[in-house]
Image (cartoon, rainbow, N blue to C red; front, side):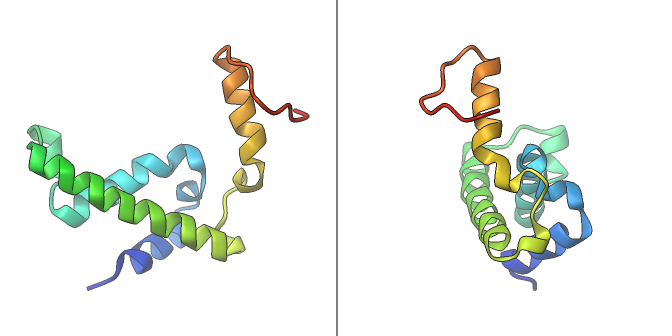
Length: 105
């Protein structure tokens, strides 16, 4: 059986979209649901509160591994990895918020 780290690293290598922040939640959710055996169920039924709690914990584990792998392996980083602050500021501005720190965008 593969570890979460091995699964995430394998998917980051195979699917470049998974490296981008905008796709992270979708891919991590699929992996967490699959790991819990809930991928098929969530398509046709509502998850129980216990299943949702299990999913939240599992998703957190997958997200931590995703962040650690990208932090330690530059070759697997997406195009937006080094532009986090600028992207966040642009999003805040588009939503009508005034960012705390002015970055040149």
